[in-house]
Length: 550
Image (cartoon, rainbow, N blue to C red; front, side, top):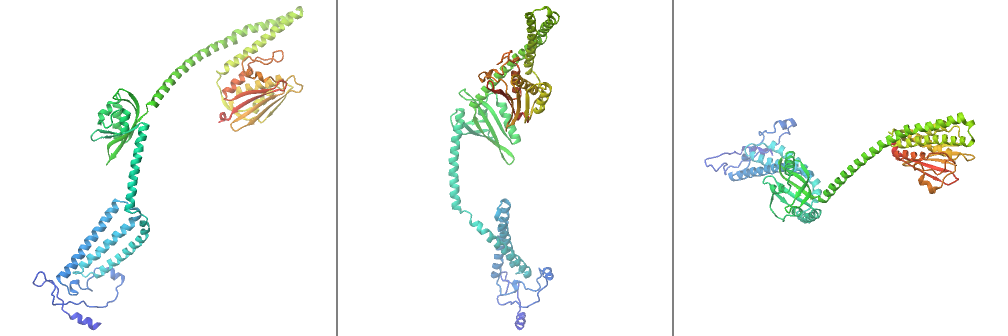
């Protein structure tokens, strides 16, 4: 091998142009490259001398090259390099313009691979003059690594790519989608026609307006009639400024508008419509406005009628309120008259009756004394009746003060203050806390307890029970006595003013107490009713809704 190397080294080397311009290398001289083994360089030496040429001859000087052979080789490499360079450039531009998603890494790797392959061809051409074989090997190594990475990405991507539909299949699906779109558009147009909805578009460059067929039908204008912005505005007399301002604002803010407009058709008929405009923006500029027109005449007319009815009702309510205010003023005057002018003669009658009885009773016979006793009793009863009437009339005008009221405490205080000396046994169980006016609630239980004690007073062992029960949405309070009871046939009269089911000879009363209870329960959004049987006592029910407690 060494002998061969020595012999080869003695062969003369002839390179360059000799006389004729087309002849670069003498065809009679054969140049032979020497073969020599050298020691492997270290890593540092390798990269430091990456562009070194001292250990290799230029390609022109290695082998037998004709000008045609050499330049065909060189030009081919340069053309391949140019093609390999343009391919990744176009790929990278495509990647920049489009998001390929899953295939982006593969496309990028393929571009780098093609580029590195092109560089190897460029180096092959350069080596004819500069023998940068070490740099060529380095670039080829990089190309090998990139090619392996690209193959790996392809292996990973091919299964996914195989799931993609073929162009023929995609075309079929596109054709089917187009057909379905046309059918849906036809259905949509038919639906718009049935729903009396029309579409339109305004081109801001030409002020030309295009309408759908259903919009022509709404305005009762022959289909296909040429329409511009001015003609469109003519159908909204007195509303042109409103429409122009809405359009200008929509263009300025690139927003939409929504108006209710009264249209005057060419035939003179008027129609309420809802007009919606949607701006279309291209390159930051509003170029057109498209929208919808809906026939809302029926609903608008109903709204107008409802508004008129509401205004009429409001006027009637105001008139009724004024009447009630006048009645209340009269009632106030009447109450003042009762509380002052009627009480004075009653006090005089009662006073003189008692004076006669006190001073002249020994001189009076029994019948005269009985007359005076009856006068005194009835005057006192008249006073009580006046008090009850005033209490009932003032209840509606009384200001309420709602707060939490402990019913157990209310009933306990009433028993201790009013019924300590009563022979009735009064039992109280499970009374809740409610939300209400304490003074009014106190009045209700005072009246019901008084009635229960009064109507059971003639029993041998009179008893009264006040029991509370809780339900999901309410509290129910029962006031039960074992008194004389009443006939349920007359239950509807219980809560009417001055209606009594027992005479004064049996049980005293004015007939106002239960009516007052019903009025108070109504003011608390509650209910009151009774159940009874003659001779078997009575039960009065009070229902307080829990909503009042919120």
